Length: 289
Image 1 (cartoon, rainbow, N blue to C red):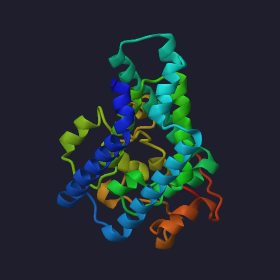
Image 2: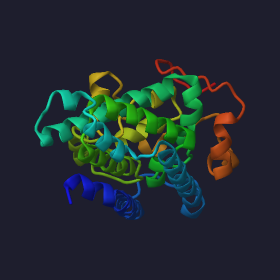
Image 3: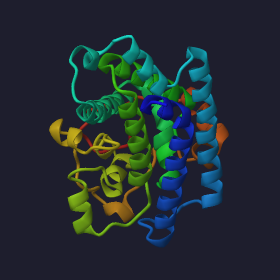
């Protein structure tokens, strides 16, 4: 059995193992060394956030059944048909995997900026930002329509690259793991945080992005690699009020039935309000008016 066949056969088990392993690790870290006090109990938020996550898993599987392939399987198919840049310009396998991770991460950065900049997309993405607390489950809390949109964007990027299946799997594992890590309500010593954020998005770096202040929420878009924010001028070191004092969420969406319960999360994109959002706003203020 080839390496690609092994990957395809065991892909679900590999992904689930890393997901639950990272969830348990960060959750334990949060329990021992929390950064902020919680507004709501774990039982209430986790049951709804993780309920939405599992709902999204089934939604994604439905899309995969509809199109007949997962992202890793799509990568295998594109390789077999010789489509994409890496199939035109052959590179060493290790370099293709490395470039796949880097380029797909850049696509995620651009996508993240766009879901903040385009009002219609912000309606979907605000489900993620409306979480009144910030912990490991926030990293997996997205509206199913945003998940589906992300899947098709990722498939387009994989097609464009002709990405190797191993590179796609590595990217997805790393992205999921780092998303849970940098959404963790965990305390890191300042010196360690400053070193880590040179090569990976840390919780203190990404937490700024979840501020109710527009200029702070319009910063630190990276989920995995921190370099894009520094290159494109969207990096912000710290929130004004400090991490314990900053207000998290969306200032105009505060009711628990909207921000905590899964029914409110699923209906949020269709709720009232203009959902205006301009990614280049420089004035202080709320994330939406």
